[in-house]
Amino acid sequence: MLNTNNFDYETTTLYDALEAYTRSSESQDDNVTNSTNATWPSYDVCDPSSYPQDFLTSSLFHGCIYLMYSIVFLVALLGNGLVCFVVQTSPRMKTVTNYFIVNLAVGDILMTLFCVPFTFVPMLILRYWPFGFVMCKVVNYTQAVSVLVSAYTLLAISIDRYMAIMRPLRPRLGKAAAKMVVAAVWLGALTTAAPIAVVTQLQRPTPWHEVCQADICFEQWEHAGQSGQYTCALLILQFALPLAALVCTYARIAHAVWGGRPPGEAQDARDSRLQHSKRKMIKMMVIVVTVFTICWLPLNMFIASTLVLWTVHEEDERWATWPGMPYVWFACHWLAMSHSCYNPIIYCYMNNRYRRGFKQ
Image (cartoon, rainbow, N blue to C red; front, side, top):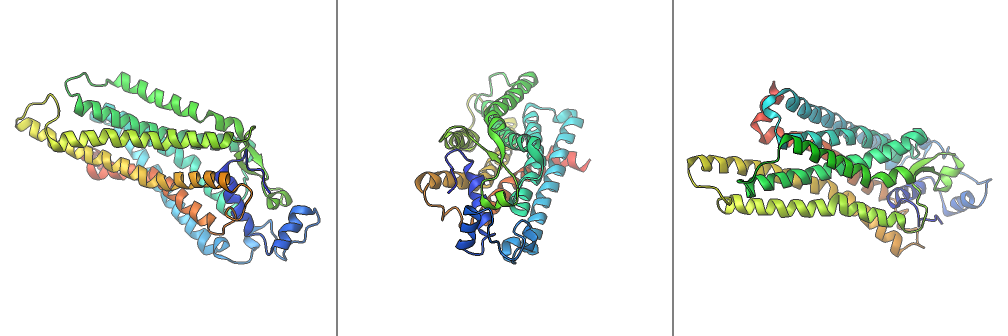
């Protein structure tokens, strides 16, 4: 049985499930586990393309994987690149909120470059890490940083909008201060993800990886329980706390904008137009937060579930080798990665300035 006390739960669970596809029977698994002269099936177990055809190893499933991730990759790079270009080349677009939106786009570009190709290929196609030790550390660390940057930037946007609407008579956040907030977002993300850069290693967690001399890239913690504690901390810092703050700020803003005039504002024709503009802006930001929740909630629930199951059923690996595990991970991971291509679409659809910038 694997010693999972100091392993990365999500990665270990997925590789356990994938290993099950290389077994033709329990006796073969025992041979692999207990003997260096294991009796293997007639096909080459170290070559996934030679496996007996099931849907997981079929060319149809692999084609769907490549197609779906390629769409996310191209749309995210193009859309977020255009957002950065429009703001950079248009003086009118260089506002505090747009600085935050550009930072969000940069985080999404980083996620697209490092999370999409370097995750599904070794996980679902090759079933091992072919990119070496240095890229193992760089990719894992950058993945965590990019996700945290997106979460923290959404939080900064919501606070900026809250102060602008709920405290209209107070001085607005200046561009210099906005740049400091962006720097703080990156510093917070880099610091929060720092343990990943330290504990990420190349490992061979299953008999399949030992026999085939194939490494995988995941977290190897020094002491039992540290992985679970850090995973819980990330779930809170990257998802739970930002989501709670976003819901609270936007709920108060929505109540003020739709329920009556914001504090300190007079009622006249000009304010009526301003109210309409604010309502449109709030709709856009609420959609951004809703999309963030829909995209990231399943993957966070998957990670939390594996953590709980490892804790409760540590001596029972049957749930970890459930054949449906790779499909669940694929669906959750693709949905999370697709988040990087939605924000530019939302901005283009709901913001006239962005639409004009995209057309130009």
